[in-house]
Length: 178
Image (cartoon, rainbow, N blue to C red; front, side, top):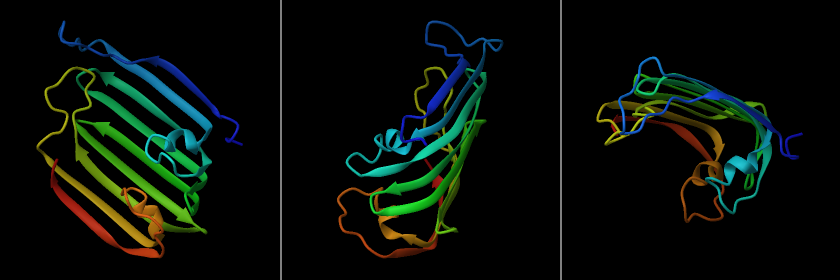
């Protein structure tokens, strides 16, 4: 059921280069992580230290391509998620990386209806080699839509707020450069 630890399988290799030699185009990645029933608390600990969480996560991440131009994709399904006082039926997410662009999407469902949606593209250098700057001065876009989303779900990402109540409705469209 996921609260017992879940499972993960990692296979393959990731092509990585350091400053000691040039990247070889023929040295490619072929890596995959599959996970099922992993407690959400194991992931949430990274970002939501001290907040009670429940639920389980299934998903995968795949890396192909060479160290200079990796192709990365992933998806996750969070089931029966609780984050503090917010209970969600599910959260689905996906992301991909190619041509120095990260594209991501997230949907949160509460009581059978979508209450939160985020979609965006951010320029970033995720090559598996040393670079002087990972952030790129190129266009980005991001859209967030909330439809009766629990306010405490959104404010959970902002430190210092307590006893938040209510709902959030609206859309935010962001653009610019990183």
